[in-house]
Length: 616
Image (cartoon, rainbow, N blue to C red; front, side, top):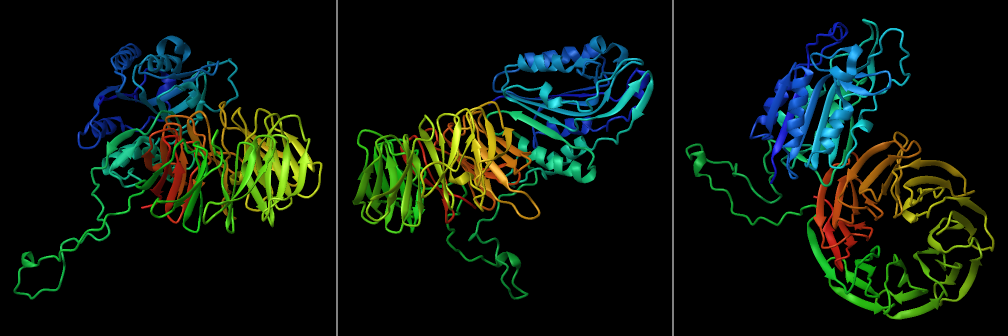
């Protein structure tokens, strides 16, 4: 296990006349050093510099990052004044900084970024509690951008940046100061959350960096609404900063504390003997209830109906498994030469699924084959049912079959030049996306198309991305863009660039209320799950995993569940984005989870189908 190293740089006193006129930062750095150094709380090796000149700060900073090892956790904290020069570059002021000579008397953001980039540590934390100003000598033209863009200056893998503010509060013309700023309360709440353990939001005894940021952010905004902390991270897994010194293990249901039975006055309390009762095994979120092993990777989305889980496997079979015990009910070999990765649909006594070029109808109780229809080209992984008809897409068109006997009732072919990859049904339309640049809305009973819209770079969507009233469909693509399409006319209502990496699975849309908008949850090949506000696309939170996220999340009232190529199934708080639990399987998780009756059903490339406890 690596070391925990912290360097705290605090500057309150300045030689520069103009800097002395600014509101001084709160003198909280010493208190932060004490709480980080406390072995019962955080146990960091702490170095603190207060009101030091640039040459001293630079030398210590260089040594701090140069001497780190790969598994060390480093924390660099700076409190003081930040200044933007005439080119918009950021500089952090030291005791001897001159506003007229920032290049040689201040610590530039570029220098800090280079030092961090050259450091071997892959867990780096940068905390900036600064007030910012524009340092423009008289007669110079100041840039009009009032934001500092702090986060953009410190991007890097393995790095987390927390900043108390990101806007300039002052500007200079000569020695004249314009603007004002209240003293920041960021570090004070940082210290309190660590010292008292109140930043342990999930009450598990550990304070993670995610929890600490959410706690401080909310406290700061409540006290000073004009101050808006921000965060940026690009790390694998979670970073535990400290322990909650006031934490005590919860009393599990069924465990009796010392009995408080009524006793005669003459009997001393110590003679009261508690009843001996058996302690039941507690239900722990993320705990495995059972695992069922197949002969291949499980990338199919499980369907859970009437106590049975239906799922396909790369061994070519469709399985029916008891949802409670994990015992096999039956299996039906569908594709001996290939895989079954489609999402089964159960309608009455029949399970419909696809494999390779065929659509299958299988008896839900016995596994007997009812009928099979050869489509002539690769089938979509989604099947839809409207009334008595089963709809399925293929490379060369969309087909509808009678659910009872498999007789073809309708087909729509010839839209576009490339293969269909996914399909979504509304009340009147079949919406399909192809491997090219288009999404089509096809009438369910007529030939031709009602609309088409261009979404380049290999679109992806699915039933989970459809709004409750079926009026909107969210579509991602391989460039990391997320589009909203009106299902009635195909109009692209808006578009948002999530990241530069691919979206490879359908987003999940959860409706809001009259007071709050809905949320779009979408995974990305950059290793993150994003929670975006409906319409505005404002990021509510971002959760980092160790590998691409290529599953469609499942969501209940409090938790969003998803898998990652790092082999882990995650349960994350829908509001804060904080991790509730994780479960490690033996291979990448490409099977989108299904939640039913308090259990999460999900497959893994380790050939297993898992039933995990969803909640506490």
